[in-house]
Length: 97
Image (tube, rainbow, N blue to C red):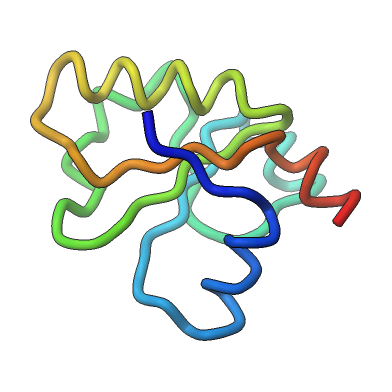
């Protein structure tokens, strides 16, 4: 599984790298704090797989990086994604940066 550190993600954001950002937490968590991107909760990730781009990197994140790992595993088990990245440490690591 590919991963990206919060610092690398910040560099992508700052340099306007073309990628998609997906928050796999629940709506209330997303409303409380998020780093951007679209909300697709873990429980609905395979249902909305058509929203996930295949032609550019896609970074998935959650609070600690565990749900996003699960989301990536579910996606690669059912679909031919090879462009997914897990944000190491999730929003908790992002806040400490």
